Length: 492
Image 1 (cartoon, rainbow, N blue to C red):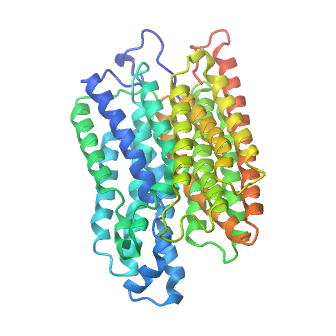
Image 2 (image 1 turned 45 degrees about the vertical axis):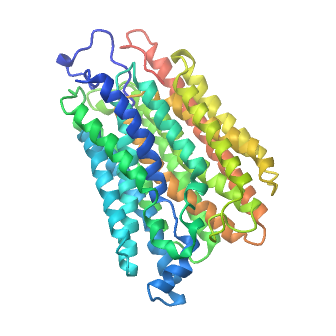
Image 3 (image 1 turned 90 degrees about the horizontal axis):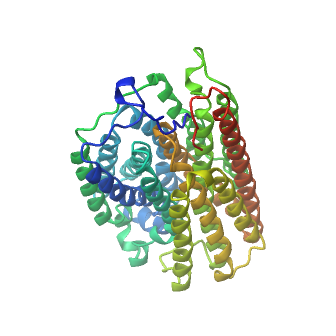
């Protein structure tokens, strides 16, 4: 997971630098990249979300199924998470082999196909196909939008990093509200849940097409061999485990929660192991290490992974405790106070992500680690697990703000491979963490406070582990870059 630094002074396309050459239309390319990110990331997250659970009785009735088929309908609805776990890492790899706008267009076409298919859902199989397309499209969009960050020039990369981190954290914080829009209108409109916010799809498509038109003349020469790009497929290992668990969860919620937590834990262990292998100097037999830059990529992946794991699942758990029922159950609108709380948490995450991306380079390494520690403190403050929604707002805001600060800061100066891996690990962590938190709540249905506390302790451990990985790898890469004879600084 190499995070290639900014090219040294004097580097030019002639010596094969693995950095983007100047865009043929840099102003248009940057503007449309930002606009595409700000629309594509929310579209991907909303499309893959489970918007059907509140309406299962209506779905079963309209499809002519029996009540005993509820489990099959639930699995069909959840198939988006399965495809997301598999598609995001593959899309990350494709975004290194192809221009990102090509993969973006593919993701939009798949998502549009899901919207069209939703109008003709008349069977359980068609429902599953539609949700499969949602997951596939979301994986393509997440990874390729992250690739836009890495393909920007060093001067413009902070702007795109701010956009991607802000769009991700802000949308994850608002996801419980955004996933209810059609449910609030009544259960008779369940098919509209399968095509959320069609205007957002149209706007995103317009920006991506404009980006493609502005980028057609761009070319990126390469320095490192193409086999380095296989590192983008590393998130596929936990993705396969997560997809299997999502597709065939145990009957007992307790076992489902335990297995999901094991997948999350092993994913972080894998990031640490990869980092340990990559911090050693590269050589003829280990060209992929790129003189410690792989350690920077591992730090980037660890921060992105926790962003996908902790924000949405924690917000949903707090809402579950504060409302009389699961916030995703039933068609009753969320109270205005709850929506206000979600907006406040999202704003905190967005502002912190922008601040992290615009932070001076000299402070970035410290800011990354501090952001993760601040997020852990926010999760720890929620452990009393009060049912009062507004009492939990400061803790959630600190959690989202810390994650946004770390994510924006870590993305602002890493290279193209590290950014696509970031998109891939978010696609793996998001559905698995959702399964883990939901299984915990189901396991402790009679004591939701206990379930939420268990999840919050898990979040604290995950954030501290990610902070440890980031601090260790960034420190090692810094020492390596400052050795006598080192090629130059390796940005964290």
